[in-house]
Length: 389
Ligand code: SF4
View 1 (cartoon, rainbow, N blue to C red):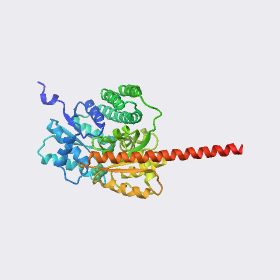
View 2 (cartoon, protein in one colour):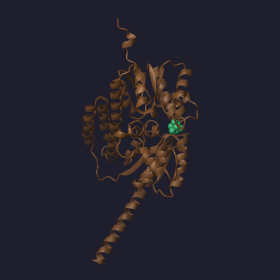
View 3 (cartoon, helix red, strand yellow):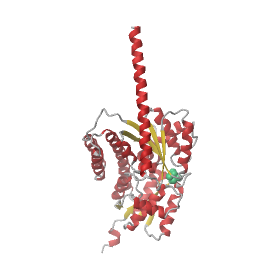
View 4 (tube, rainbow, N blue to C red):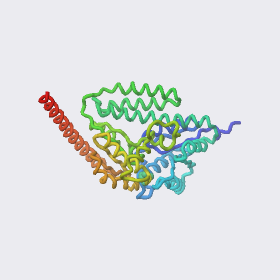
């Protein structure tokens, strides 16, 4: 007789952060588990996390704890947490969350994914989550999850391009959501390749104004709040509405290139390698979190002559407090406007949007002034050439 308990799939919940759930879900499905996806992060998640977390801890901790409480209440069997060593609180997050859930009387099993152990850490995680030891199956799960992250990050960039230029507001988002579905529906390499092509076709359906005056902005900061639309109050959508094309400096795919993907499979300079190169005059070593990357992102955005950079950080985030204190010193060499935004459960929407609008106004005026100066210079040069000839 088959034991019912053994045939039942393990339900596994994980922290939400932007579109990362699509990659988690694919890996868990491939190893024979059931991904526990919804509910997504909401105000309820935030208030649950805030209620049971130390007051001064950073926002991602509160949201992840809230995700887990909701998942356990919803019937998940396991919660999967990402951990890593580090100079900031991230190194303690895992144990703290496990203890908090235990103190609240929850019995769901807790599993950790040791991120900085690279492929080995992922393998050990899949082994524990599935209760199996199947290297081929795990290799496929890791590969598909990584490929999905890359496809999704590319999709976000394409979405941002179309959203800033769309003729009918909301059109780009409508097609973007269809593309997300395409990515979610396939768990094979060939399927993802085809999804990539279909995405390009789908997004081309958005009617755009190619002559629109579009501003270019980079978003950097702590990786969780940069990639999680709930915690950053969907800043990219707001900027898109104002005609701004956004490029995220910190993406999950760039993180994977540095922390997970073996060197022989990488092409070009990684984000961390660029950070080491460009942050040096201002910050000499890694101080935890994403501070080194953020400082270098400002220098990189300035080097490319883009219109501005927004720095997002959770309130009390130690590495980002450091990077925000370095930005004023960078102004000596970097002309680029920087908008630092601090996020926590108290962040009010109206004030937040007003600051973004004021920043966009400033960038637009600066860009028009610069364009005018270039035009004047060009016409002066042309006049001189006419006289000489
Ligand atoms: S980087 Fe900042 S927000 Fe993230 S865990 Fe460390 S202290 Fe908290």
